[in-house]
Image (cartoon, rainbow over all chains, first blue to last red; front, side, top):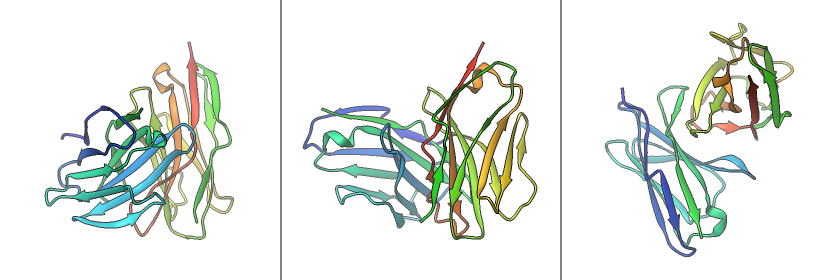
Length: 110
Length: 115
């Protein structure tokens, strides 16, 4: 059974650009969550989607957005990138009270 | 709001020893889930063990066990017969029963297993 797949694994972007990250959940999982991990703030919840609907959102600015498709794949977008957006972005796929994480996308903003 | 606190930023133990990682949390909920996740240098977040708050029995997974004290809001992880492969960041985490799938993580404990 394939795990959670995140693409790309690494990204380097310039301030002001936008970026789109992708997450393919485990087959049969309809819930996808996104987290930002930084050395200073640790792991912070961004948002969660279930059956194409955003059910929950963390305390991030509107530059951070996401969506989920009918096949449960999810994308998150960050517009007008700032240096502080440099982080590891983790996606989690859930079924019941158990979340399985992808290997993350390391985003570096220069 | 729920919070999770891990008071040990870093720990080191010798291989084959037993180590206990501490975690406390704060919530007004009565039913919830608690987790320990392991994040090795590969960055993959791996679920180590899960505890349902309504279960009094402490969860166990092979060499990993927890000491869940609901009244004290404490959830420690014990690793027995530690192995070099246990070297990683360990995160204590919390999720409410309503399963909104929002996991709240502690800051983590960096564990070094020394040969």
